[in-house]
Length: 53
Image (cartoon, rainbow, N blue to C red; front, side):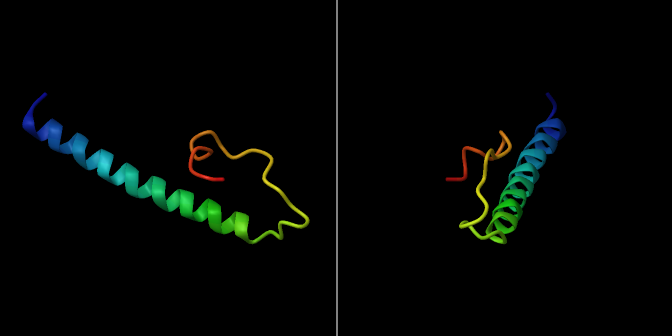
């Protein structure tokens, strides 16, 4: 792999992590809008279930 290809891959990984974190924050924010007395999470999507309690 060329140096430019490696740099491009590094940038993809860095951007992906940032987007993933933003997406996780968004999903937590939406979940927090619902009162736990009346609603519960049945299943998180597989990509974030490891990050939420």
